[in-house]
Image (cartoon, rainbow, N blue to C red; front, side):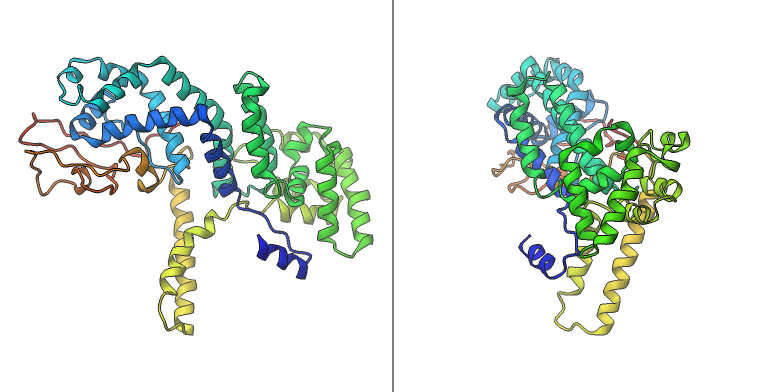
Length: 431
């Protein structure tokens, strides 16, 4: 941020903004740290760690949930927490049935301290009410996270508007009780300040017809008005004539819905924010009467709001540049590798089904806290393992991560367990 400030002093036409994905994750993690949510998350985490710590309880859980795991790896730590809470809520009945079954009574872990704690957690009505409350509060911000972290269409025009809507949804989820939602709203606003409420975000919000046509008084909002003026002053730095032309003439037509902006087809074209809606294309079609504002709007509304796409290429960049000799050949190789990887990722995303959960990850690196405890795990005496079985299923002396795509196995000290296949993320979609 310090470097950005120095850069803007030298080059006043530059716009700088925080990564929206990172900022929203900070909001979610801070909210999850509030006492009422932290307690529920800790209870849920203790439950999943207990179940995944023993092959017997893991196989039993998968049997009762019909091959469905309760821990789901996400693209971030909080995404893993949210997806796991969703799975817990969806398998509430199956988990309760498991812990009151004869199989659980006969399980040797039922009488342990952790086993009893897991039992009381699952049968506790207060725990499930807490899970439902967490999902209600987290869901609006997670929906924003999905929008800004996807690669389907540019998201700059939706960041500010969706965060405003998320705050309203959270208030409704908490029945409009100020003492309940005030700490959450304060966290959101603190993380937004100077990050996701810059003149760039406010101008994108105003120029997105989806919000402008839905709320006719949007342009009268003080923050939006000030932000749009500051943006125009920066974009046309030193050009007072162009600033006045865009603000007083062209933007005025858009606000009043004059000329092409007032046609019924223009109104209907931005009524729904679905996959076909593209605000930049809308301006390309209906902004012919305001050529300067049209060009400006298309640039802003075609921007992404997160650096996630760039971060995925940094691993290749680091690998190539760890070598001591950095010549022209290596530089060309670096560029080619980044282009190939980025294009491959885009092609793979397009091949996927439309409703695939964007927050799911290919590995369980961010789900580690939900699978293993932060203490060493002792291997039980008398238990022998088949060497050909998945390494991830073995009990560990360390806290290394147990992978989720694991098969059940046979043990000489336990009865035979039917092989359970883990569900494929491509075929299972979490709403």
